[in-house]
Image (cartoon, rainbow, N blue to C red; front, side):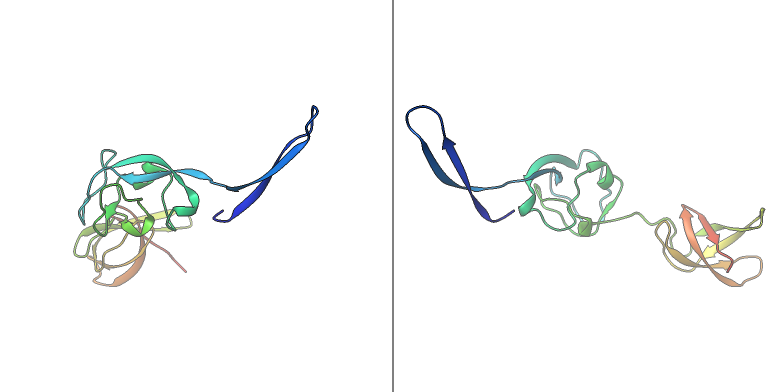
Length: 156
C-alpha cells in the first residue's frame, strides 16, 4: 500500500486520441480508536476517553483497535497521549481475581457440581490460570478464573 503505482488515463473518442500515465498512491482507510484526551496509567477507559477517526491503514501501528467498544472497560497499562491511536499494547483487562481475595471454587465432574471457598494465591485475568488455596482442606489447587470471584477447577 505504501508503493506508488502508475495509472493510465485515456481518451479514446473524438478526433484526438490521448493517454497519460499518472503516479498515484493507493490509500486504504479504516476506523481507528483514538484517545480523546491524555490517559494516565491505571485508568479504566470509558466511552468518553475514546473517539473514532478514519486513518490510512499503511500508517497505523500493529495492534490498532478499530472498534472503540473493545477498549471500553480495559485498563491503561502505560500513559496514552491525547490523539494517539490506541493499540492492544496500551491496554490490559481488569483483574478478575486478585491475590488474597476470597473466591468461590467450582468443580464440575459428570453432572455433579461442588462449590467451596478458596483464597487466591495469585492475580488472574478472566480465562487465565490461577493458584487457589481451598479454605476447608488447606490444599492448593490450580484453576481458571471465569469471572470475578469464581475459579473453575479443571479435572484432568
